[in-house]
Amino acid sequence: MTEWVAEHRSPSKRPFNISSFHLGADITKPTSAEGTSAIPRNVLSSLQARPSFLMVGTVEPRKGHAQVLDAFELLWASQQDANLLIVGKQGWMVESLVERLRDHPESGKRLFWFEGIDDDYLCSLYAQSDALIAASLGEGFGLPLIEAAQYGLPLIVRDIPVFREVAGEHAFYFQGEQPQALSESLTVWLGLHSNAQHPKSESMPWLTWEQSAQQLFLASQAPGN
Image (cartoon, rainbow, N blue to C red; front, side):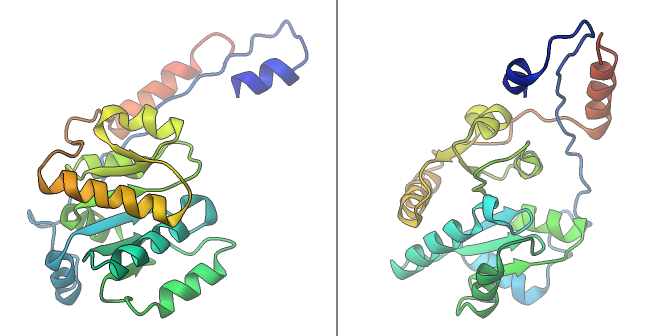
């Protein structure tokens, strides 16, 4: 934004400042200490049977769901036993992907799409999963990274600047937009995880919504805003 304004905005005597603030992430905890209360027993048994990888966000092209599903199909074909959990409603331009998700032979077995769940269910999934996958090609912030970190959930994220800004050294980064590249990265992560050598998210800094609002208030008081 700063670069665009410098290039396109006409000179003016009026002050014009650009600032930002971080989002809050103090969402509700599950109703039970184990985080299992909102998950049906049959789904929970599948989650506990093998490693579960969670994606959170509207199903739309830039979120990278298609690449992740393709990568998991490669993992399943190579006898890697893992769950892919997708939380988010259907967005735009994903009709063919939605058809794949609903008709997939692993649907309800190792592939789960939760289209409309409440915060308690989401928190329970955070608590029961083994890692968060954030495969977005572009993001404004990446709130699921911080939500997941509150549960100590390891982060597997695409190597884009905003994720580096939010997660720093607390995430495992992958590159490439092809399924094979991601499946190889996931295989590497699984190897690191088996030896507890994967990047940890527990100490990743985050704000409450009250602190976020205070940042916004201070930014709004700056000269020129």
